[in-house]
Amino acid sequence: MHPKQLLDACTELVKRTLTFEHPADAVVSRFFRENRSLGPRERATLAETAYTVLRKKLLFEALAHSGSGPRERRLAILGFAECLKEQSGKEPKTRAREGFDSDSFVKAALLPQELKWLKDCASIQPEDLMEAHRHNLPEWLVAPLKAQLGDAFWALAASMERSAPLDLRVNILNAKRSDVRKELEKAGIQAQPTPYSPWGLRVDGKPALARLDAFTRGAIEVQDEGSQLLALLLDAKRGEMVVDFCAGAGGKTLAVGAAMRNTGRLYAFDVSGHRLDALKPRLARSGLSNVHPAAIAHERDERIKRLAGKIDRVLVDAPCSGLGTLRRNPDLKWRQSPKAVEELTQKQAAILESSARLVKAGGRLVYATCSILPQENEAIAEAFSAAHPDFVPLSAGELLEQLKVEGGDALCSGGEDGRRYVRLWPHRHETDGFFAAVWMKKA
Ligand SMILES: C[S@@+](CC[C@H](N)C(=O)[O-])C[C@H]1O[C@@H](n2cnc3c(N)ncnc32)[C@H](O)[C@@H]1O
Image 1: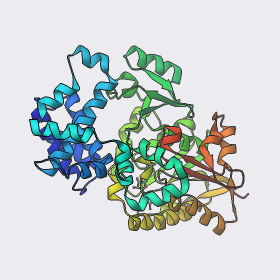
Image 2 (image 1 turned 90 degrees about the horizontal axis):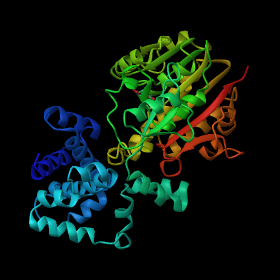
Image 3 (image 1 turned 45 degrees about the vertical axis):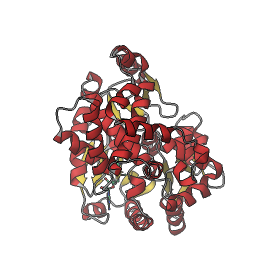
Image 4 (image 1 turned 135 degrees about the horizontal axis):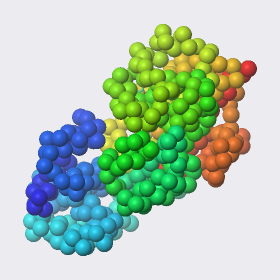
């Protein structure tokens, strides 16, 4: 596709994502379905351009006050130029061999006056920008993040403007991490063991995985290292009765089922039958037969009542604002609101309350989110502890130590020993932002 046409397509995609009517990943997927002839590199440029605009929306909107032509085109030009620079920096050898030069590509796409405007924008120094144009976050999010992080707020804001690494979880039921690593290397894919999760591999770049044998035979699944750690924290054992209360498409379910070595019984509940449907092909690949997906009407469903007091381990990966995943879902910072978060906290408390009824004496309860807001995390956990003296809070740091996670203390915060909760941050741990609290039901 000619650079001019690609920029036009980027402009259209940027326009659609900025309506915020649907999640950006759904808008991008739909756009690709409507334009099936797009090649992999064009798709990558389109998606990254749209995501760059979402990540740096406040800065780009300020820059787009100058220049000429439709506003969406100006925003798309800024995202397009940045994305191409990034791409050429990441794969210099391959693309240089193909004669690709990002500057000439951008030049070929732009009108002369647009090129001049882009150069003027690039000459602005970061220190001359207003604060909001440097952090690109909505004001309502800034105060709670600064209160938690102090000066490290800026490192978080910068990390949220980058894309997340590609992490894989090796299915320990049918593969070994070291073998899978070698197999990927043979396919030209470099990967390193993740620093904390014993199941993880962090892949260089963003290679296509779906056609790899390791993928089709269920030896690997794409899963952020942080998400793997939450499944690990449940520490589900062979032969146990386990519930994944908010299983969704089953990222954590699959990890927990493999940790149970395909024994016992693992119920995967969710109110969304649609999400549970997405678990089925993954389940088929994984070789697990101990997982029982079931759609529930709500958290007080009859099925829950029947299992009350019978379950060894319950994982509550609660619906949340998702603000820990801004590297992957940058649109969330513009789609969420304080009101939506407030509503979510009520849902989270209700789900935790109901799911706790399942836990048997001596059993374990894990509450987790991919949020970085204390009201969805520590506040929910502390209110639950206060209302339930029969649930003993466990130290996440101690549990990670028992699970032989090296440097596990650095993943934790809160409580008397500073290790009560798992608290993962993109700028500190290179994972999405995650929270987890663990309790044991008194015998
Ligand atoms: C954070 S997502 C789960 C992600 C999933 N555990 C994974 O690792 O891929 C939260 C899930 O909670 C589900 N949910 C929302 N309300 C619920 C409820 N009352 N009871 C059970 N699940 C609920 C949503 O449908 C969504 O799939």
